[in-house]
Image (cartoon, rainbow, N blue to C red; front, side, top):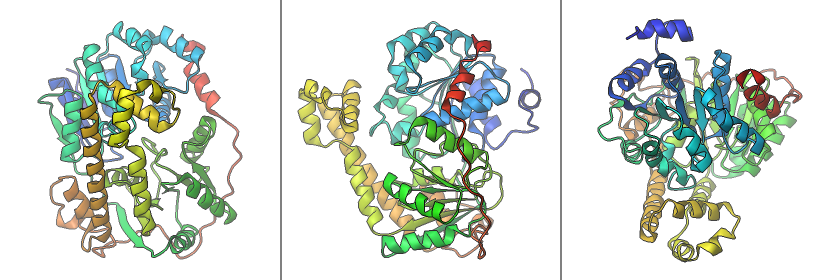
Length: 478
Protein backbone atom coordinates (compact mmCIF):
# COMPACT_ATOMS: atom_id res chain seq x y z
CA UNK A 1 0.00 0.00 0.00
CA UNK A 2 1.35 3.38 -0.96
CA UNK A 3 2.14 5.75 1.91
CA UNK A 4 -0.96 7.95 2.13
CA UNK A 5 0.75 11.25 2.98
CA UNK A 6 3.28 10.77 0.21
CA UNK A 7 0.45 10.20 -2.27
CA UNK A 8 -1.40 13.23 -0.87
CA UNK A 9 1.63 15.43 -1.52
CA UNK A 10 2.28 14.02 -4.99
CA UNK A 11 -1.32 14.15 -6.23
CA UNK A 12 -2.90 17.04 -4.34
CA UNK A 13 0.07 19.12 -3.21
CA UNK A 14 -0.84 19.02 0.50
CA UNK A 15 1.74 18.16 3.15
CA UNK A 16 -0.77 16.82 5.65
CA UNK A 17 -4.39 15.78 6.00
CA UNK A 18 -7.01 17.95 7.67
CA UNK A 19 -9.02 16.75 10.62
CA UNK A 20 -10.72 13.39 9.97
CA UNK A 21 -9.58 12.98 6.37
CA UNK A 22 -6.90 10.34 6.89
CA UNK A 23 -9.07 8.34 9.30
CA UNK A 24 -11.94 8.37 6.81
CA UNK A 25 -9.74 7.25 3.92
CA UNK A 26 -8.13 4.45 5.93
CA UNK A 27 -11.53 3.22 7.13
CA UNK A 28 -12.89 2.93 3.58
CA UNK A 29 -9.72 1.17 2.43
CA UNK A 30 -9.88 -1.33 5.30
CA UNK A 31 -13.64 -1.77 5.90
CA UNK A 32 -15.12 -0.83 2.48
CA UNK A 33 -17.65 1.61 3.96
CA UNK A 34 -17.78 4.55 6.35
CA UNK A 35 -19.99 7.35 7.58
CA UNK A 36 -17.82 10.43 8.19
CA UNK A 37 -19.23 13.36 10.17
CA UNK A 38 -16.56 16.04 9.84
CA UNK A 39 -16.76 19.76 10.71
CA UNK A 40 -17.61 22.26 7.97
CA UNK A 41 -14.60 23.54 6.09
CA UNK A 42 -12.42 20.47 6.68
CA UNK A 43 -12.37 19.29 3.06
CA UNK A 44 -14.75 16.33 3.03
CA UNK A 45 -14.65 16.15 -0.77
CA UNK A 46 -10.92 15.39 -0.70
CA UNK A 47 -11.74 12.05 0.97
CA UNK A 48 -13.47 10.61 -2.10
CA UNK A 49 -11.24 12.45 -4.58
CA UNK A 50 -8.22 10.90 -2.87
CA UNK A 51 -9.79 7.42 -2.88
CA UNK A 52 -10.69 7.69 -6.57
CA UNK A 53 -7.12 8.60 -7.50
CA UNK A 54 -5.46 6.23 -5.02
CA UNK A 55 -7.52 3.21 -6.05
CA UNK A 56 -7.64 4.30 -9.71
CA UNK A 57 -11.37 3.60 -9.66
CA UNK A 58 -14.56 5.22 -10.93
CA UNK A 59 -16.49 7.22 -8.31
CA UNK A 60 -20.26 7.86 -8.38
CA UNK A 61 -21.18 10.85 -6.21
CA UNK A 62 -24.77 11.66 -5.23
CA UNK A 63 -24.95 15.40 -4.64
CA UNK A 64 -28.01 17.44 -3.59
CA UNK A 65 -27.59 20.76 -5.41
CA UNK A 66 -26.55 21.79 -8.91
CA UNK A 67 -24.43 24.64 -7.50
CA UNK A 68 -22.57 22.15 -5.31
CA UNK A 69 -21.93 19.85 -8.28
CA UNK A 70 -20.66 22.78 -10.35
CA UNK A 71 -18.28 23.82 -7.60
CA UNK A 72 -16.85 20.31 -7.20
CA UNK A 73 -16.49 19.81 -10.95
CA UNK A 74 -14.69 23.13 -11.30
CA UNK A 75 -12.31 22.23 -8.47
CA UNK A 76 -11.42 18.86 -9.99
CA UNK A 77 -10.86 20.38 -13.41
CA UNK A 78 -8.67 23.06 -11.84
CA UNK A 79 -6.60 20.25 -10.28
CA UNK A 80 -6.13 18.79 -13.75
CA UNK A 81 -8.75 16.02 -13.64
CA UNK A 82 -10.59 16.15 -16.99
CA UNK A 83 -12.64 12.96 -16.61
CA UNK A 84 -15.41 14.51 -14.51
CA UNK A 85 -19.08 15.14 -15.32
CA UNK A 86 -22.18 16.42 -13.52
CA UNK A 87 -25.47 14.88 -14.62
CA UNK A 88 -28.46 16.94 -13.57
CA UNK A 89 -31.76 18.33 -14.78
CA UNK A 90 -30.21 21.45 -16.28
CA UNK A 91 -28.46 19.61 -19.09
CA UNK A 92 -30.31 19.73 -22.39
CA UNK A 93 -31.51 16.51 -24.01
CA UNK A 94 -28.59 16.52 -26.47
CA UNK A 95 -26.08 17.18 -23.69
CA UNK A 96 -27.47 14.31 -21.61
CA UNK A 97 -27.31 11.96 -24.56
CA UNK A 98 -23.73 12.97 -25.30
CA UNK A 99 -22.78 12.45 -21.64
CA UNK A 100 -24.48 9.04 -21.47
CA UNK A 101 -22.88 7.91 -24.72
CA UNK A 102 -19.43 8.75 -23.34
CA UNK A 103 -20.04 7.94 -19.67
CA UNK A 104 -17.36 5.23 -19.61
CA UNK A 105 -14.76 7.95 -20.18
CA UNK A 106 -15.54 9.68 -16.88
CA UNK A 107 -13.83 8.88 -13.59
CA UNK A 108 -15.88 11.12 -11.29
CA UNK A 109 -19.61 11.11 -12.04
CA UNK A 110 -21.82 13.54 -10.09
CA UNK A 111 -25.58 12.91 -10.09
CA UNK A 112 -28.63 14.19 -8.27
CA UNK A 113 -30.80 11.54 -6.54
CA UNK A 114 -33.60 12.35 -9.01
CA UNK A 115 -31.36 11.58 -12.00
CA UNK A 116 -30.80 8.10 -10.61
CA UNK A 117 -34.45 7.29 -11.32
CA UNK A 118 -33.65 7.34 -15.05
CA UNK A 119 -33.70 3.81 -16.46
CA UNK A 120 -31.38 4.88 -19.27
CA UNK A 121 -28.78 6.20 -16.81
CA UNK A 122 -29.07 3.11 -14.59
CA UNK A 123 -28.55 0.84 -17.59
CA UNK A 124 -25.37 2.75 -18.47
CA UNK A 125 -24.12 2.66 -14.88
CA UNK A 126 -24.71 -1.10 -14.65
CA UNK A 127 -22.34 -1.56 -17.56
CA UNK A 128 -19.55 0.19 -15.65
CA UNK A 129 -17.37 -0.92 -12.79
CA UNK A 130 -17.97 1.60 -10.00
CA UNK A 131 -15.32 1.43 -7.32
CA UNK A 132 -16.85 3.87 -4.83
CA UNK A 133 -20.37 5.12 -4.13
CA UNK A 134 -20.43 8.49 -2.32
CA UNK A 135 -23.40 10.24 -0.74
CA UNK A 136 -22.30 13.83 -0.17
CA UNK A 137 -24.22 15.94 2.37
CA UNK A 138 -25.70 12.67 3.62
CA UNK A 139 -27.85 14.39 6.25
CA UNK A 140 -30.19 15.25 3.35
CA UNK A 141 -31.38 11.62 3.47
CA UNK A 142 -32.99 12.32 6.82
CA UNK A 143 -33.69 16.04 6.38
CA UNK A 144 -35.03 16.17 2.83
CA UNK A 145 -35.96 12.57 1.99
CA UNK A 146 -39.29 12.50 3.87
CA UNK A 147 -40.11 16.07 2.81
CA UNK A 148 -39.41 17.11 -0.78
CA UNK A 149 -36.60 14.84 -2.05
CA UNK A 150 -38.12 11.32 -1.73
CA UNK A 151 -35.58 9.86 -4.17
CA UNK A 152 -33.04 10.02 -1.35
CA UNK A 153 -34.95 7.16 0.25
CA UNK A 154 -34.14 4.89 -2.70
CA UNK A 155 -30.34 5.20 -2.57
CA UNK A 156 -29.80 2.04 -0.55
CA UNK A 157 -31.80 0.00 -3.04
CA UNK A 158 -29.95 1.61 -5.95
CA UNK A 159 -26.54 0.91 -4.41
CA UNK A 160 -27.41 -2.78 -4.18
CA UNK A 161 -28.71 -2.87 -7.77
CA UNK A 162 -25.41 -1.47 -9.00
CA UNK A 163 -23.53 -3.99 -6.80
CA UNK A 164 -21.15 -1.38 -5.43
CA UNK A 165 -18.87 -2.71 -2.69
CA UNK A 166 -17.44 0.53 -1.29
CA UNK A 167 -19.67 3.29 0.15
CA UNK A 168 -18.77 6.58 1.78
CA UNK A 169 -21.39 8.86 3.34
CA UNK A 170 -20.24 12.39 4.22
CA UNK A 171 -21.82 15.18 6.25
CA UNK A 172 -20.89 17.96 8.65
CA UNK A 173 -24.04 17.82 10.76
CA UNK A 174 -25.78 14.73 12.04
CA UNK A 175 -27.39 14.12 15.40
CA UNK A 176 -27.43 10.52 16.67
CA UNK A 177 -30.91 10.09 15.16
CA UNK A 178 -29.88 11.40 11.75
CA UNK A 179 -26.78 9.23 11.92
CA UNK A 180 -28.98 6.15 12.29
CA UNK A 181 -31.32 7.33 9.50
CA UNK A 182 -28.34 7.53 7.12
CA UNK A 183 -27.11 4.04 7.99
CA UNK A 184 -30.60 2.56 7.71
CA UNK A 185 -31.51 4.14 4.36
CA UNK A 186 -28.12 3.32 2.79
CA UNK A 187 -28.27 -0.23 4.20
CA UNK A 188 -24.92 0.08 5.91
CA UNK A 189 -24.95 -2.49 8.70
CA UNK A 190 -22.07 -2.37 11.19
CA UNK A 191 -20.50 0.51 9.29
CA UNK A 192 -17.73 2.41 11.09
CA UNK A 193 -18.65 5.97 12.05
CA UNK A 194 -16.01 8.70 12.12
CA UNK A 195 -17.37 11.61 14.13
CA UNK A 196 -15.66 14.88 14.98
CA UNK A 197 -17.26 17.77 16.94
CA UNK A 198 -19.15 20.41 14.97
CA UNK A 199 -17.60 23.22 17.02
CA UNK A 200 -15.74 25.95 15.12
CA UNK A 201 -14.33 28.15 17.85
CA UNK A 202 -13.14 30.89 15.49
CA UNK A 203 -16.78 31.80 14.73
CA UNK A 204 -18.39 34.18 17.23
CA UNK A 205 -22.02 33.17 17.90
CA UNK A 206 -24.45 36.05 18.39
CA UNK A 207 -28.23 36.37 18.71
CA UNK A 208 -30.20 39.62 18.60
CA UNK A 209 -33.95 39.76 19.32
CA UNK A 210 -36.41 42.43 18.17
CA UNK A 211 -40.02 43.19 18.94
CA UNK A 212 -40.93 43.95 15.31
CA UNK A 213 -39.63 43.15 11.82
CA UNK A 214 -39.06 46.89 11.25
CA UNK A 215 -36.64 47.08 14.19
CA UNK A 216 -34.79 44.04 12.88
CA UNK A 217 -34.45 45.55 9.41
CA UNK A 218 -33.09 48.85 10.73
CA UNK A 219 -30.54 46.99 12.87
CA UNK A 220 -29.34 44.95 9.89
CA UNK A 221 -28.90 47.98 7.63
CA UNK A 222 -26.97 49.78 10.35
CA UNK A 223 -24.68 46.81 11.00
CA UNK A 224 -24.03 45.82 7.41
CA UNK A 225 -22.63 49.19 6.32
CA UNK A 226 -19.71 48.70 8.71
CA UNK A 227 -19.18 44.98 8.04
CA UNK A 228 -15.63 43.87 7.40
CA UNK A 229 -15.14 41.38 4.57
CA UNK A 230 -17.47 39.23 2.40
CA UNK A 231 -20.66 37.87 3.93
CA UNK A 232 -23.91 35.99 3.32
CA UNK A 233 -27.34 37.02 4.61
CA UNK A 234 -29.85 34.15 4.72
CA UNK A 235 -33.62 34.62 4.32
CA UNK A 236 -36.53 32.19 4.30
CA UNK A 237 -38.42 34.52 1.93
CA UNK A 238 -37.38 35.26 -1.65
CA UNK A 239 -39.38 38.49 -1.53
CA UNK A 240 -37.58 39.74 1.58
CA UNK A 241 -34.19 38.78 0.11
CA UNK A 242 -35.00 40.87 -2.97
CA UNK A 243 -36.18 43.79 -0.84
CA UNK A 244 -33.11 43.90 1.40
CA UNK A 245 -30.78 43.47 -1.56
CA UNK A 246 -32.25 46.57 -3.22
CA UNK A 247 -31.71 48.56 -0.03
CA UNK A 248 -28.09 47.40 0.17
CA UNK A 249 -27.53 48.45 -3.45
CA UNK A 250 -28.95 51.87 -2.64
CA UNK A 251 -26.37 52.11 0.16
CA UNK A 252 -23.66 51.53 -2.43
CA UNK A 253 -22.81 47.99 -1.33
CA UNK A 254 -21.66 45.29 -3.77
CA UNK A 255 -24.63 43.03 -3.17
CA UNK A 256 -26.65 40.49 -5.18
CA UNK A 257 -29.64 38.27 -4.50
CA UNK A 258 -29.64 34.47 -4.97
CA UNK A 259 -32.62 32.12 -4.81
CA UNK A 260 -34.17 29.24 -6.72
CA UNK A 261 -36.52 31.58 -8.59
CA UNK A 262 -33.67 33.05 -10.65
CA UNK A 263 -32.57 31.68 -13.99
CA UNK A 264 -29.76 29.12 -13.77
CA UNK A 265 -27.41 31.38 -15.73
CA UNK A 266 -27.91 34.23 -13.28
CA UNK A 267 -27.45 32.00 -10.22
CA UNK A 268 -24.22 30.60 -11.62
CA UNK A 269 -22.87 34.08 -12.34
CA UNK A 270 -23.63 35.36 -8.84
CA UNK A 271 -21.94 32.34 -7.30
CA UNK A 272 -18.82 32.83 -9.43
CA UNK A 273 -18.66 36.55 -8.74
CA UNK A 274 -18.88 35.93 -5.01
CA UNK A 275 -16.16 33.28 -5.16
CA UNK A 276 -13.92 35.70 -7.06
CA UNK A 277 -14.47 38.58 -4.58
CA UNK A 278 -16.38 40.66 -7.13
CA UNK A 279 -19.42 40.65 -4.86
CA UNK A 280 -19.18 41.36 -1.15
CA UNK A 281 -22.67 40.39 0.02
CA UNK A 282 -25.13 37.74 -1.16
CA UNK A 283 -28.74 37.94 0.05
CA UNK A 284 -29.74 34.31 -0.26
CA UNK A 285 -32.21 31.60 0.55
CA UNK A 286 -30.97 28.15 1.61
CA UNK A 287 -30.48 27.35 -2.10
CA UNK A 288 -27.11 29.10 -1.85
CA UNK A 289 -23.85 28.03 -0.28
CA UNK A 290 -23.81 24.28 0.19
CA UNK A 291 -20.32 23.14 -0.74
CA UNK A 292 -19.13 26.64 -1.64
CA UNK A 293 -15.37 26.64 -1.15
CA UNK A 294 -14.81 30.30 -0.28
CA UNK A 295 -12.31 30.63 2.53
CA UNK A 296 -12.69 34.31 3.45
CA UNK A 297 -16.41 34.68 4.25
CA UNK A 298 -16.25 36.81 7.40
CA UNK A 299 -19.87 36.70 8.51
CA UNK A 300 -23.11 34.79 8.03
CA UNK A 301 -26.30 36.58 9.09
CA UNK A 302 -29.68 34.86 9.41
CA UNK A 303 -32.39 37.44 8.86
CA UNK A 304 -35.08 34.83 9.49
CA UNK A 305 -35.19 31.89 11.85
CA UNK A 306 -33.71 28.77 10.20
CA UNK A 307 -35.73 25.54 10.28
CA UNK A 308 -33.48 23.72 12.75
CA UNK A 309 -30.04 23.69 14.36
CA UNK A 310 -28.68 21.33 11.71
CA UNK A 311 -29.43 23.87 8.97
CA UNK A 312 -28.06 26.68 11.11
CA UNK A 313 -24.74 24.93 11.80
CA UNK A 314 -24.42 23.97 8.12
CA UNK A 315 -24.96 27.56 7.00
CA UNK A 316 -22.76 29.31 9.57
CA UNK A 317 -20.09 26.72 8.77
CA UNK A 318 -19.53 28.50 5.46
CA UNK A 319 -17.96 31.30 7.48
CA UNK A 320 -14.26 31.80 8.28
CA UNK A 321 -12.90 28.63 6.68
CA UNK A 322 -9.48 30.28 6.52
CA UNK A 323 -9.20 29.90 10.30
CA UNK A 324 -9.43 33.63 10.98
CA UNK A 325 -12.20 35.30 12.99
CA UNK A 326 -15.77 35.10 11.75
CA UNK A 327 -19.23 36.04 13.01
CA UNK A 328 -22.55 34.18 12.98
CA UNK A 329 -25.38 36.60 13.71
CA UNK A 330 -28.97 35.37 14.09
CA UNK A 331 -31.70 38.03 14.06
CA UNK A 332 -35.08 37.11 15.53
CA UNK A 333 -38.53 38.67 15.77
CA UNK A 334 -41.71 36.76 16.75
CA UNK A 335 -43.11 36.64 13.21
CA UNK A 336 -40.16 34.37 12.27
CA UNK A 337 -41.71 31.51 14.23
CA UNK A 338 -45.05 31.98 12.46
CA UNK A 339 -43.22 31.87 9.12
CA UNK A 340 -41.38 28.63 9.97
CA UNK A 341 -44.58 26.90 11.09
CA UNK A 342 -46.25 27.94 7.82
CA UNK A 343 -43.33 26.47 5.83
CA UNK A 344 -43.52 23.28 7.89
CA UNK A 345 -47.20 22.74 7.07
CA UNK A 346 -46.71 23.68 3.41
CA UNK A 347 -43.95 21.11 2.84
CA UNK A 348 -45.74 18.12 4.33
CA UNK A 349 -48.97 16.58 2.97
CA UNK A 350 -51.64 15.96 5.59
CA UNK A 351 -53.48 12.68 6.24
CA UNK A 352 -56.54 13.68 4.19
CA UNK A 353 -54.42 14.54 1.13
CA UNK A 354 -52.48 11.28 1.33
CA UNK A 355 -55.63 9.13 1.63
CA UNK A 356 -57.42 10.89 -1.23
CA UNK A 357 -54.56 10.98 -3.70
CA UNK A 358 -53.25 7.52 -2.83
CA UNK A 359 -56.52 6.11 -4.15
CA UNK A 360 -56.82 8.59 -7.04
CA UNK A 361 -53.32 8.80 -8.48
CA UNK A 362 -54.53 9.80 -11.94
CA UNK A 363 -56.10 12.91 -10.41
CA UNK A 364 -52.84 13.68 -8.59
CA UNK A 365 -50.87 13.39 -11.85
CA UNK A 366 -52.91 16.27 -13.31
CA UNK A 367 -51.63 18.71 -10.67
CA UNK A 368 -48.49 20.68 -11.53
CA UNK A 369 -47.74 22.13 -8.10
CA UNK A 370 -44.48 21.24 -6.37
CA UNK A 371 -46.43 19.76 -3.44
CA UNK A 372 -48.30 17.42 -5.82
CA UNK A 373 -45.05 16.33 -7.47
CA UNK A 374 -43.54 15.54 -4.07
CA UNK A 375 -46.57 13.47 -3.12
CA UNK A 376 -46.33 11.60 -6.44
CA UNK A 377 -42.69 10.75 -5.75
CA UNK A 378 -43.49 9.67 -2.20
CA UNK A 379 -46.19 7.29 -3.44
CA UNK A 380 -43.78 6.02 -6.11
CA UNK A 381 -41.36 4.84 -3.37
CA UNK A 382 -43.70 1.88 -2.89
CA UNK A 383 -44.71 2.69 0.67
CA UNK A 384 -48.27 1.86 1.68
CA UNK A 385 -50.88 4.49 2.49
CA UNK A 386 -50.49 3.89 6.23
CA UNK A 387 -46.70 3.98 5.99
CA UNK A 388 -46.84 7.38 4.26
CA UNK A 389 -49.28 8.75 6.86
CA UNK A 390 -47.10 7.50 9.71
CA UNK A 391 -43.94 8.86 8.06
CA UNK A 392 -45.34 12.35 7.52
CA UNK A 393 -46.83 12.54 11.01
CA UNK A 394 -43.51 11.50 12.53
CA UNK A 395 -41.74 14.05 10.37
CA UNK A 396 -44.13 16.80 11.46
CA UNK A 397 -43.44 15.98 15.12
CA UNK A 398 -39.69 15.97 14.47
CA UNK A 399 -39.87 19.38 12.82
CA UNK A 400 -41.84 20.85 15.72
CA UNK A 401 -39.28 19.43 18.14
CA UNK A 402 -36.48 20.90 16.02
CA UNK A 403 -38.09 24.34 16.27
CA UNK A 404 -38.32 23.90 20.04
CA UNK A 405 -34.58 23.19 20.23
CA UNK A 406 -33.85 26.22 18.07
CA UNK A 407 -35.89 28.51 20.30
CA UNK A 408 -34.05 27.10 23.31
CA UNK A 409 -30.77 27.99 21.58
CA UNK A 410 -31.97 31.59 21.18
CA UNK A 411 -32.73 31.79 24.90
CA UNK A 412 -29.62 29.93 26.11
CA UNK A 413 -28.37 32.15 28.97
CA UNK A 414 -24.91 30.60 29.29
CA UNK A 415 -22.76 29.26 26.44
CA UNK A 416 -24.41 28.87 23.02
CA UNK A 417 -21.37 26.99 21.74
CA UNK A 418 -21.79 24.37 24.46
CA UNK A 419 -25.54 24.19 23.70
CA UNK A 420 -24.79 23.22 20.07
CA UNK A 421 -22.18 20.65 21.13
CA UNK A 422 -24.69 19.03 23.49
CA UNK A 423 -27.39 18.99 20.81
CA UNK A 424 -25.18 17.04 18.41
CA UNK A 425 -24.02 14.65 21.11
CA UNK A 426 -20.41 15.86 20.98
CA UNK A 427 -18.08 15.54 23.94
CA UNK A 428 -18.17 18.45 26.40
CA UNK A 429 -16.09 21.36 25.17
CA UNK A 430 -12.74 22.04 26.87
CA UNK A 431 -12.89 25.10 29.11
CA UNK A 432 -10.78 27.17 26.74
CA UNK A 433 -13.36 26.62 23.99
CA UNK A 434 -16.32 27.78 26.05
CA UNK A 435 -16.05 31.26 24.62
CA UNK A 436 -16.89 33.29 21.57
CA UNK A 437 -20.63 33.76 22.06
CA UNK A 438 -22.94 36.53 23.22
CA UNK A 439 -24.34 34.49 26.12
CA UNK A 440 -21.15 33.68 27.99
CA UNK A 441 -19.78 37.14 27.24
CA UNK A 442 -16.35 35.93 26.18
CA UNK A 443 -14.67 36.80 22.92
CA UNK A 444 -15.89 39.27 20.34
CA UNK A 445 -16.78 39.22 16.68
CA UNK A 446 -14.21 41.72 15.35
CA UNK A 447 -16.21 41.72 12.12
CA UNK A 448 -18.60 44.62 12.56
CA UNK A 449 -16.58 47.82 12.88
CA UNK A 450 -17.67 51.23 14.12
CA UNK A 451 -16.48 52.97 10.98
CA UNK A 452 -17.77 52.27 7.52
CA UNK A 453 -15.51 50.30 5.22
CA UNK A 454 -15.23 51.48 1.60
CA UNK A 455 -17.16 49.23 -0.77
CA UNK A 456 -16.81 48.69 -4.50
CA UNK A 457 -19.68 48.94 -6.98
CA UNK A 458 -21.24 45.70 -8.25
CA UNK A 459 -19.38 44.48 -11.36
CA UNK A 460 -20.99 43.97 -14.73
CA UNK A 461 -22.07 40.38 -15.39
CA UNK A 462 -20.44 39.05 -18.54
CA UNK A 463 -19.83 35.30 -18.33
CA UNK A 464 -22.45 32.61 -17.97
CA UNK A 465 -23.41 29.00 -17.45
CA UNK A 466 -22.97 28.26 -21.16
CA UNK A 467 -19.21 28.65 -20.75
CA UNK A 468 -19.30 26.17 -17.87
CA UNK A 469 -21.17 23.63 -20.03
CA UNK A 470 -18.75 24.20 -22.89
CA UNK A 471 -15.92 23.12 -20.60
CA UNK A 472 -17.73 19.90 -19.70
CA UNK A 473 -18.29 18.93 -23.31
CA UNK A 474 -14.96 20.09 -24.72
CA UNK A 475 -13.62 18.01 -27.60
CA UNK A 476 -10.65 16.74 -25.61
CA UNK A 477 -13.06 14.70 -23.48
CA UNK A 478 -14.71 12.73 -26.27
